[in-house]
Amino acid sequence: MKFLEHEAKSVFAEHGIPIPGGFLIRSADELSGYLEKLPPEFVLKAQVDVGGRGKAGGILITDRQNGVATARSLFGKTIKGVPVREILAEERLPIIHEYYASIAVDRSTKEALILFTEEGGVDIEKLARERPFAIRRASVPLLMTEIPPFMLRDLLRGAPNEAGRILQCLYTVFCRKDAILAEINPLVTTSSGIFAADAKLIVDDNALKRQGISQNRDLTERERAAERHGFSYVELDGNIGVIGNGAGLTMATLDLIDFFNGKAANFLDVGGGADQERVMHAVRLVAGVPSVRVIIVNLLGGITRCDEVARGIIDAKISQEVIVRLAGTNEEEGRCLLMEKGYRMLDSMEEAVRAAVEAVR
Ligand code: GDP
Ligand code: MN
Image (cartoon, rainbow, N blue to C red; front, side, top):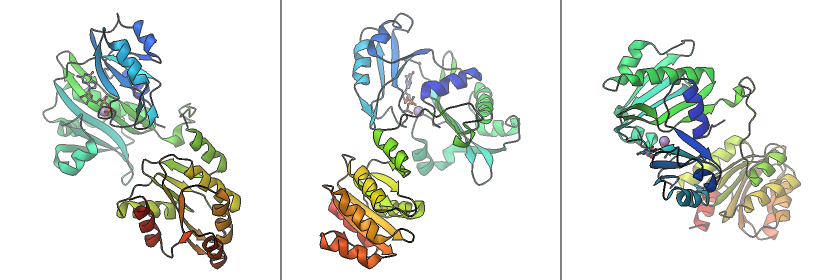
């Protein structure tokens, strides 16, 4: 489970990591009550569960005079599709330098992977692609209660001494909270010390019970519907709706869309043995996403029967085009049903995906 910035910051602060002073507000008017307690200049940070809020307009610098109006405009926005319901109003830090520090589970070695770079603030994935040597790494076996000092010295060459203490605190958070990621980007230096200007914490879903956390993630209406039907469903930001059976086949469909330079709008795995009704619900659910312009249904008939799938697609009666690739049990019957109704049926995944990508071009 992903913590919001303000939640992650509270956890970090409890473990000795300095954070900027601030207040969480749920409406612009609420800010008026805090104006006297905030410095003349401060930042408003949208508390949304997406990365790169800064570039997406979710972080605004303002002052006492304009704060309430700025907060009002930020509350009206959606950042990368997520509506702003909470804002963290925080003192503006006079930043000298931005560092990056993170600890993640390294799945291959089953150890804690620590990353540190003096080039923080920016998109770490981009830095890893363009200047991988700028990122320092160390692996710590999870049984260790702290990061061995020799590793810290190596990681932090040239960085301020306080960074070492912060990394030890971050490691404690990581272990105690059963995290799969604990990240500070940027970790900033100012004339009055070092601070976590941003905070990210993802707790392993398998540890939520042990951590006493009840998952209270805001599901969208569609995500809730998908959960009720038992579909594995993830929303993405493209325009091609994707329905498959089995995580592997559905992922492969997404990969092919990417290969042909298309953009998937979602991932929907109907699961095993989907019948007519389930397929209909799946198609309707995906067709209900406003950005979806075409849907590709890529199903392999095993226990799932292709004729049932075909009937489900026809029953859905949606306005967007559905491009179908069916193979396996009762394939011929399924094909006939769909052909009669004028659906485009393609023999291979490649052809079907290519047709879908061309349809939205
Ligand atoms: P993200 O874009 O979602 O990662 O949000 P961040 O909290 O990391 O903010 C993005 C950028 O905004 C940072 O890298 C800083 O450059 C800037 N920023 C955030 N908070 C402050 C602040 O208190 N003072 C100043 N000067 N800049 C800030
Ligand atoms: Mn950040």
